[in-house]
Image (cartoon, protein in one colour):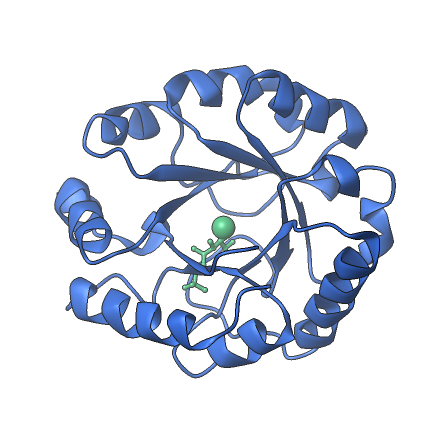
Length: 223
Ligand code: DX5
Ligand code: ZN
């Protein structure tokens, strides 16, 4: 049975008081922290890397869900695990050796995820799906917080959930980008169960916003 989980993306936190923002989200009930690493190559922007993750690791025991938006992520998998990642998600588009990268993540003893950009077909998951703990469906083009949900992604989520059910797999489906109070019901209804939210959580009133999301997550059946 899958659980519905909120994964606040710290990309939208205020880095002047990152620890405070993180603790407010976690204490309000968020079970994952979504950590977006960007290299300025796979995506246009550069975010943060190992030192930041290592530093916040000492602030909380919360599950660190690390989303690598970097080219050739296999170069850094062990390093991110050492910094404190509990799961690592690599983009199918960023590596020539997706199967090997997935095995490398699992070999480190953490959960393995594969992310697909909006235009990447679900078939890119063929031959690795059985090995994954999570599939991350990008619901915006990766690279920035605060973008609008791409409505065509609802059908993609539904198709993936049907495919997983037909295969007897309980893999998590994570959605990332444009998830807000007015779009989250649509993705949950389609079969997503791990919801990333950055700009909709951080800013003023973090705890209140987390609580509202947690209530909505509770309204939806487990997949
Ligand atoms: C975008 C990142 C997201 C981002 C989401 O490339 O992968 O995790 O932080 O931000 P919002 O929720 O504001 O769309
Ligand atoms: Zn992300």
